[in-house]
Amino acid sequence: MQTRFSAEQLRDPATRASESELRRCVHCGFCTATCPTYVLLGDELDSPRGRIYLIQEMLESAATPDPRVVLHIDRCLSCLACESTCPSGVRYEHLIDHARSYIEAHYRRPWRERWLRAALAHVLPYRARFAALLRLGRALRFAALPLARILRWQSLRAMLELLPVRVPPTKAIRCAPRSGSVPSPLRPTGTPGTIRRVAVLRGCAEPVLRPQVRAATVRMLERLGIAVVEIAGEACCGAIAQHLGRRAQALSQARANVARWRAELAGAGLDAIVTTAAGCGTMLENYPFLLAQTDDADGALAELSRRMCDVSELLLAQGLPALEPVPRLRIAYQSACSLQHGQRVREAPVALLRAAGFEVLEPEEAHLCCGSAGTYNLLQPQIAAALRERKLTHLQALAPDVIASGNIGCMLQLRGGTSLPVVHTVELLDWASGGPAPAELAPLLSRCYAAPSQSP
Image (spheres, rainbow, N blue to C red):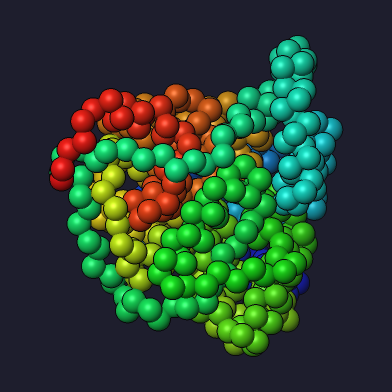
């Protein structure tokens, strides 16, 4: 693509990086078939190619963004499916993030949007605030829902409807295994025992919404002889602020994390930085680019970047612990976009679940987003609901016992539209290696108690 940025504009590192990505695009249109909003809406401006045209025009003109441009940029999920299919290697992620930060700096939104986006940026990334808001939301939910409907405030209504119900504490549920449920051992793809000391990113949403995921992860790693280090002062990864166009806030959070990991690396050492929320993992992979435009880009950051991985990657490389027989449940695996497109991790979770003795099924259109996309289901509730319905149609067509995913946002989004249990991949792996079964499986597994025990 030919660009027309001025020399003055190209002195800005973000503009210079975006110009490089714009020049890579050859307008082939391969991205349109994998873009959820284009597939759903059929509007060229709601495709990556259409948005790239809008981004170029907006950045080159250096003018106040037009509401039409803002509409189509806002509709992007940042699922990055387009990057998986782009033959030219365009880093669309960098373009859309730059466009959002430009809009945030130069466009005044209607008051409801300003209020909601500010609330999300100042509450969700902070665990204590988020937990307090969650308690308040649960208390006021049934009173506030009619008000949201009367005011026709779709984002507030979506927020209230997405509030998770309380999940009972995880209990050690045991069940007689069905015939043929003895898991086959997994052959590690790396050298077992090479990882001894790791930090598991706590994040912001997952500890509040699903603390069981971290507990299961720690148990899994400890069975492999891996120590999990608590990093004091660890912040949100910055993904929420980045997707809202609040680049300064995202940079601040990224710098805080990098500083603490550097200190640990220089001290007792750190073999890996593990994520259990795929959205956080994609953000961490973006740290080198994000910080390269500041004075924080150096060898220590590159060293840290090489140690970042999803929990499924680490477990596949190190091998699963000793496994116990579990019921051969039918698992519909929902691959989070941030995992399959953002981090290019596709096979590891499925291989692990199958090695643990589960029957794993993958849906049609597995590449399309479920509509969660961080805060997208709150900012664009109608499109998010349509994408969830489309995703659940394919998942439920598999007649599964359970839906598994590797991202808390996807789990919350899917739970809002199905009665099927939705759990994290690592919770199932923990159960198969001696940990407690997820509490949501209790009704399903209680059927097994009535059946006589079968020897595998």
